[in-house]
Image (cartoon, rainbow, N blue to C red; front, side, top):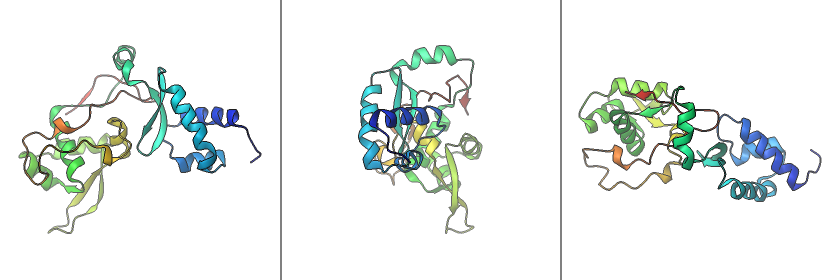
Length: 201
């Protein structure tokens, strides 16, 4: 690729982040730009600073970057996009998702033991919403499937990676009454995934 100046690099980064449907990692950006990360990272950092206070911002989630709406404007965005469908979580679904997030990889049986109720329907719904996924089988008797959270889970809660999950206020080996209170607040939609009002069971 021919040599390009910083302003051109900045414009290309803006364009690809705008059309991307999923966060683009530094390696993916390097492939698109045909430049090494150490060349374009200063330009990307500049863009992050420029967009920080704007209505459309650059989100750093799931180990990558994506354009989305500023969380401070969530109430106003929801008024416009209300007729469209949003993946908000009911308390039961949020509790199930929190158990999986903090105990992953985890089987359905382990989730049920923690929650004290059958969670099959809710877990199937979380799978259909791409917030959790199968990740192989357990070595336990019967070799049940094990489940982990996804990149969409990170995006939904505005996390870069699982290390940003808030610390548990209790021993993870205990059986807490309420897991969901420790998860971050659900985030507003990104540009290409609008917010509405439907609720996961």
